[in-house]
Image 1 (spheres, rainbow, N blue to C red):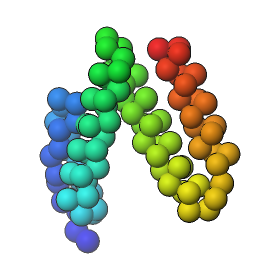
Image 2: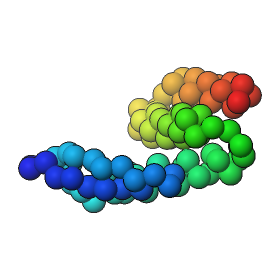
Image 3: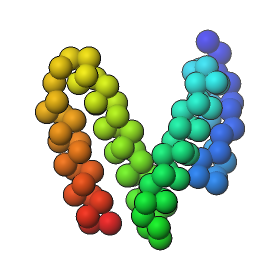
Image 4: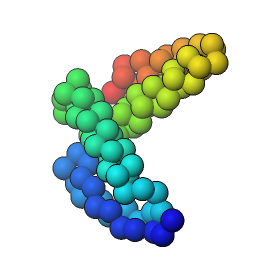
Length: 92
């Protein structure tokens, strides 16, 4: 597939992405990340944007690992992600 430029908005900022990934997939991923960042910001008012992004990334990674562990039956990785997310939240 040919590389195309897609502009997305995440947490109030516009980003120009050049990729050979389907533009609709990029837009959906950006919308999902934006939603998750807004959820984190609502739960932790006043924390810096970079920390919001890290917490959102950890939450999304936890979801990915949960989905993978559900399909394989393992829970150890998901438990570890949950533990790390809780610790990071306490620090923030």
